[in-house]
Image 1 (cartoon, rainbow, N blue to C red):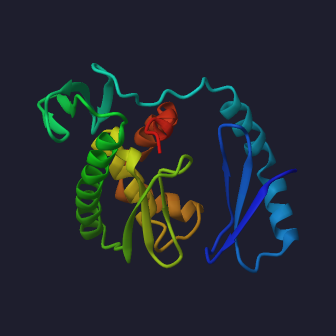
Image 2 (cartoon, rainbow, N blue to C red):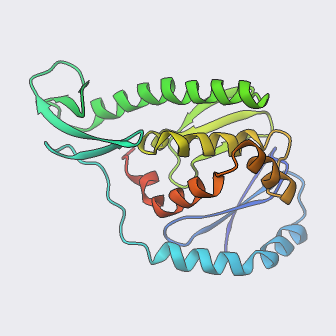
Length: 219
């Protein structure tokens, strides 16, 4: 089985599969190759099913700089408008963009600013409520992961979470915070997630249906 191997200071093995079906194995630094091979054998059915699903997906739509373009935003839809404005500005359900903008860079900078504010607020609230606090929060532009928690306690959240409803954002954060005491996906981990968010399956299902949103924003 062909795969890319990424070793780091993480504590557990993990798999990711991109839209082309390419498999990446993330492993702790000292994990023997036999343990990795055994892990792949255990997950073979999941790998085959996920690869089949990923390669059958239609080409993802990406945001374009066009008047009238729809931008999902925190459970709402903003409409891009090319207006005579100096900076990107939200006006009700419309997002005013300088008419002379040549690229989406101003919109993406605006989104990054919103992400830093909104995601930090969600993390602060949930961390306090659950008594699970990350050491650091960083913004990610990954195209395959909504969030992650490093062995050192760094919580990474994808800026594309801004395209999701607030309750979905909360699910991703709760999921990652629960990795602080449980650095795995064991039954104990999922039981902890359910205690923190009893309806988490609904939000997880929403992410699966809307998986293409993770590639909606260009780099």
